[in-house]
Amino acid sequence: MDDLTRLLRENNPFKEAPLPDRAVRGLDDIISGRRSARRDIVLPPLRSRSRPVLLTSAAFALALVVVAVVLLSALRPQAAMAVTPNLLELRPTVITIDTLREDLVKPSVNPRPTVTIRGAQWEGWFIQLDADRPTSAFIQPQRVQIAWDEDFSGTSRIIAGQPMAADGSVLEPAPAGAEEPGATLYEETWGPGEYPVPFPDVPPEDASGLRSYLDAFLDSVGVSGARPRSAGEYLYALSSLMQFWTLGDAAQRAAIEVIVSAPGVQVAGETTDRAGRTGIVLNIEPTELEPGYREQLVIDIESWRLLAVERISIDGNPDFHVAPDSVTDYTLWR
Image 1: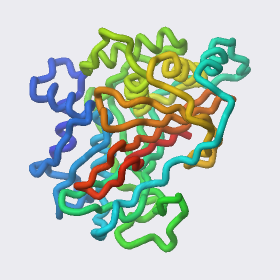
Image 2: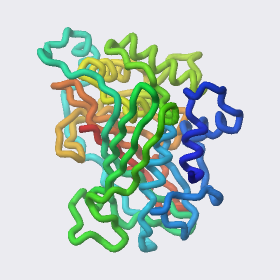
Image 3: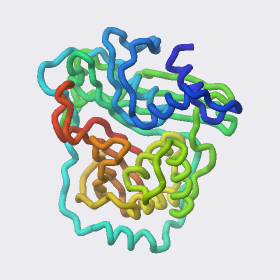
Image 4: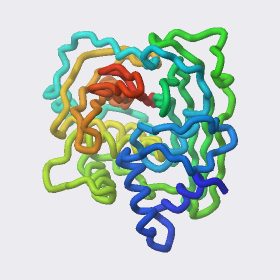
């Protein structure tokens, strides 16, 4: 059992025994994004060990697996700025936060709503930061498939996507160092009681109930509830939730209502996301969790569904050749 798997298993908050202090600190670092380069981790076999890597994506424990696999490719060093996806192009819209709030309180007219189920699938890309030089010479997203059961057994699979340029155009043939599109990069199975799931209960389908559900998660990871929680904090909790559950229509609508009802969110415009879907972009202000990043949430206001989230570095990172206002990761929900 490698150290990465051991970390996930030790940080399972639903083991019968209380978490040791070291595991609590490790879990908190994973969730809050306070992770630094590790030189002592025995990585999965596919991972190149030639250089230490600094991980920058903030997500729950499973995201440690995702980010580790994203870093599989040993890319050619580049002297120029790291390649990152272009920002989403915005178009004007008459939609405002106030109109969204008004529309969300109206009764739903969906005649055959989908239901919430265990497990999740998403597509994503996370920037690679090398300790010596930038390694992001192209963009290669991954598809993640998660399945888990009531007994906390589960499986995780990560599949390589199609290499792309910054504008989203497909690179053919695939550049040197790219993984074969469609190849399984990582796959693991956890036995009963081993899979770390921070959301064991079915998420509520109303905004009030879902807000309380997300508040409980934020409380558990040390995010203060002494003041009204921000849209960014709820988005953080919601993004973590959607790594473990596929939300049905009512829960999706409730999630959007929670976000737009919180402080720190405004409508930025309309866009076409990286999957070719039209949606409204919500600008989410930085949080105390990660003050150096802002986020954009893309929603479909016809079906009231969450389409995508984009994380953007405000000042960039000159040490790793990341320009200011660069997209450092994105997630697409289909």
